[in-house]
Amino acid sequence: MLSLGSCVTQSKLPYLQTGAYSTEKPLRTENIRPAYKLQPGDVLSIRVQSVQPVLSDIFNVPGPQTITSSDPGTLYLTGYAIDDTGSINLPTVGRVKVQGMSMEEVHSFLQQKVAAYVRDANVLVKLLSFKITVLGEVRSPGRYFIYNPQATVFEALGMAGDLTEFGNRENIKLIRQTPKGSEVVLLNLTDANLLKSPYYYLLPNDALYVEPMKARTSRGNATNLCIVFAGISAVVLLLSYIANR
Image 1 (tube, rainbow, N blue to C red):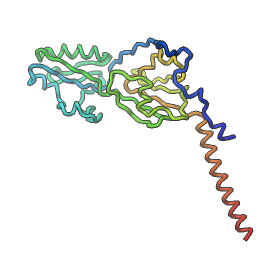
Image 2 (image 1 turned 30 degrees about the vertical axis):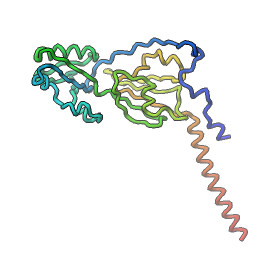
Image 3 (image 1 turned 90 degrees about the horizontal axis):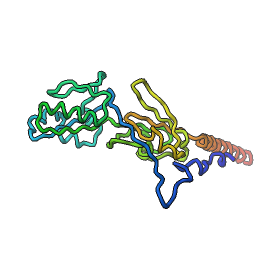
Image 4 (image 1 turned 180 degrees about the horizontal axis):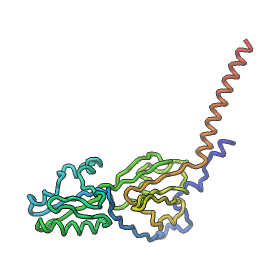
């Protein structure tokens, strides 16, 4: 009975459940990705290219070999960190405030700033600190860096090896940091309306926590009881053996 009670029903496992899917035509869902606004603590990679490499290299503090490095720690140390005032300190240009700008806006802004010092300059700006954390009932919990301008809930869970059998797919906590503090929202992976949710797209520093289902506790208790009963049986057999000698 304990074993049966610890089973997970099939209806709780599939993602995006709906009867509207078809093999003949796709089901379209509109969802505009929100533009991320830069915050203090973010780290930017800024590279300048021009026909005047002597001038453009002034802005390229880290060498090309570090930009191509796959070590997030190296990229972090060689990038431009946004300080508590929302500014970065560019060589020659000086301190410029970038807090509250989207990546497109900061690119245009820095392009104008650098153009005053380097003729026909091309500025490349990337966000280095796009990292997410996945915890709880997943196969590989941890912190993951995103090397794309966007990431979805499913991409994050895929990087963590997907949910285990006992991960509660109907109650995923998304913890998001905002200028006013932390906010928590619940996501239901089994509901197809998740694709329309404004929280379907993740933002830098988001964290996902997958709660365990009750079946996991039940199975753990059943396993513990089996161990106890096995121990009692062994003691009884040993006592019976001793008594019969």
